[in-house]
Length: 254
Image (cartoon, rainbow, N blue to C red; front, side):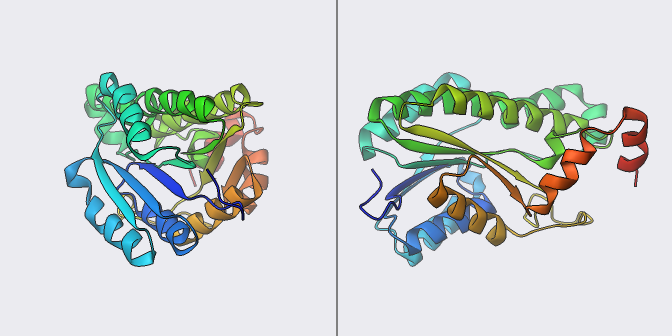
């Protein structure tokens, strides 16, 4: 449970090797968060995040094997984490892949795997989290959407569609949790400079893992339901999502 000052004392990261996840847990551990559980695959470099959390002040740091595509195991893993470490104040779910539209077009099965990683794997895990939040009577779940999901472009429509689905899921789950003491935060960043986007040309208004983490931790303290990073994107995409399709095609080609 959050402490007397309203700060989280425990966090679970689904996608424990995430660059943004590293920045988030570092900021939380520098405050009053002492328990950090990182869930992911051995090849996700979770050790780097674990070391950063310990250096920032976390006293209990554990790594758990979790595969986004192994949906049959998700309820068991989530329940084991909550049973082992007690109440979890904050669950952050940055797991996902960007992929390449040309690769998806060449291999439709790969597109289906991306959808499972970015959407259905998080859906099954986060429903299990929500069930435990209801039982404990508190908790915040933060899901990584994207501006790419607000209106898909032809050069990343597979990725954009997975984020659109996740965004809708997060909003619906948040509404379903009203009155339980738990809530959901939807995060909509633009282009973020991470290992996932390394080598790509940065889009306008690009940001960093540290800036996204600052917005998440600030939103967590304020109980914010939707976070845009940078905040200017909220106004831009209000316009973009209402453009006629013919106009959007021309705008998104630039």
